[in-house]
Amino acid sequence: MTRILVIEDEDSLHPLYRVLLDRLKYDVAVARTGAEGIAAAVKSPPDVVVLDLMLPDKPGLEVARELQALGLLNGTPLIITTGLGQQDAKAIGQSLMATSVLVKPFGMNEMIGAIRNAANSISARSSNAARSI
Image 1 (cartoon, helix red, strand yellow):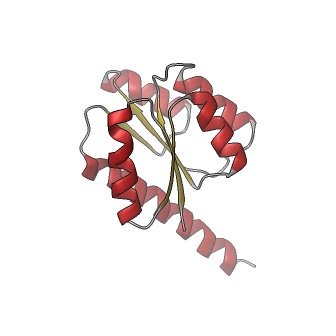
Image 2 (cartoon, helix red, strand yellow):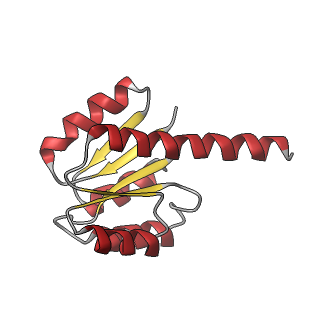
């Protein structure tokens, strides 16, 4: 089962992520702070990370860089969510090699599409790796 780690401080979104992603048969972990997100990723490495750029304890940009330094984003799709303007968000997303950048407010269908695309890219890589063995 694909494991999705959502690092988001907006409590009102947590039940939405859990219910929608559970229904789609994803294993979902939700962290409220950057530190919680990093700890959750170390404990159980995710297949996809959904990261808010504005967290209470540290910027999402710093969280992403820490996850990269720990090797936890190597080949792991990163979906950025942010309240920043479109241009700023895209620039940050490109610097982090994010799979998708979603500017708030975004629709849940947009989020589900980004997660499905990320999960499908993991499946495709796994299939190709298995064929090359």
